[in-house]
Length: 215
Ligand SMILES: [Zn+2]
Image (cartoon, rainbow, N blue to C red):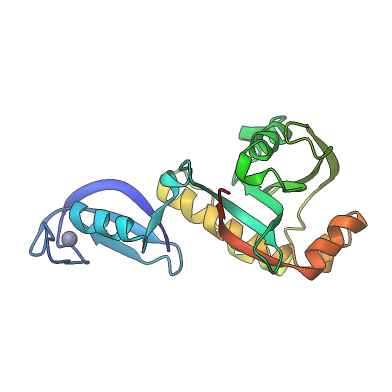
């Protein structure tokens, strides 16, 4: 499960209380947000590290290791191969004119060399790109640039005030992943796509936080 650490350290009782817990009856803890339930959990460092080592929790900051890549969203075939890799950002203006470049950086990763389609999505923009050829170093070209229909019910949970705290930004990013994973299945979206990629969306699954194994 993905968790988001808030970074704040304070004195409290650890909620995990594993065997070697350092704050069973009080001590230095930090709060993490659980991605599934948005529940906040106070944990000491020992318990946090144990959860991370066991793989029960994973932290966004550790997403890029040399062994694997985690995609915000991926369209995946029944064999688990990535057909479309999606990068989601909560703020479009910070990435203006760099959207395609960000996707090209993604597409140059060896674990994604067989992926044909890449999408950059924000609340204002959906940029769909395709790999130019089989050459892994080839650039991408833009297929279509769309605006998400924010009136779609799947975006309902985004209508919460803007915020600047890191915790709320992470939460917003998770909500946005969730919204797009549903929106990408709607006709409102797929009808605007060129046929090749429309068929991919129509007949395959969309997965959040997809771990790509480096082969
Ligand atoms: Zn603990």
